[in-house]
Amino acid sequence: MARLAFALILLVLAPGYAGLAGAGAQDRYDLPEPYLAWERAYLGQFPRLQGIMDAMVKITGAQLK
Image (cartoon, rainbow, N blue to C red; front, side, top):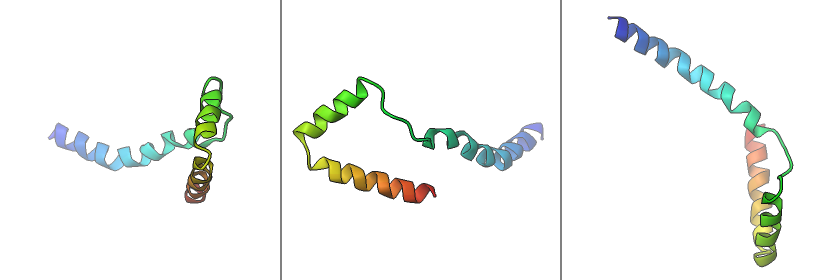
């Protein structure tokens, strides 16, 4: 009986806490080195991807609002 009660409590409370943890990950920040250099090199080889990346960022930003 105690296990059933514990499982029900988890089912009720866990979804509410799951959304709280992801909020900080949405903050804007600049890419640190060497990631910034890797992105620039990649976009230098494939410049058409910049438009796709911009669209992805725009859609994600709209979904988060």
